[in-house]
Length: 172
Image 1 (cartoon, rainbow, N blue to C red):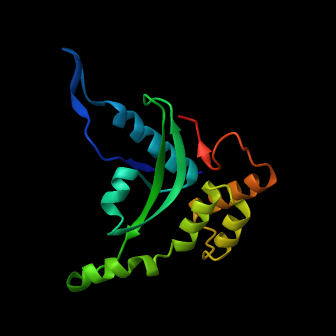
Image 2: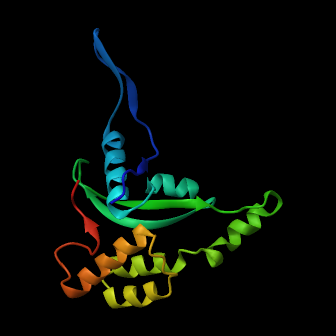
């Protein structure tokens, strides 16, 4: 498996030196501190180098290629929330003088368009449609996220668990 993954979340946390006189550590506390651990863990399990939350996704979607990799039932949040984890892949090649036009046209050139459509169908419970859409995706044996997703699709096609949304991870 993957040796490491980077988890990135966006938002406010409380941070500072915590501990006693002889042993202080710089720490982050709050729900985001727990959430970043979950994002990193999901990224590592799914083979993503950089895993991000939805807030970060909204900040980078126009400048980087991203794809959904896992819905997570975050039990440490009160009340429990279903949150999305994405993989941030690489920066879009935006030319300085044409960046607005390129962002506008970006959805048509997105190399993850079929993957994202497949994932959306998968989350709606249409496993067969998701498999058909995934066939349009360029196959790369080194793409760990794609390989992991294809394995989950095959497993769901054999024995879908209808007690929770398809693809949901409730490990956290």
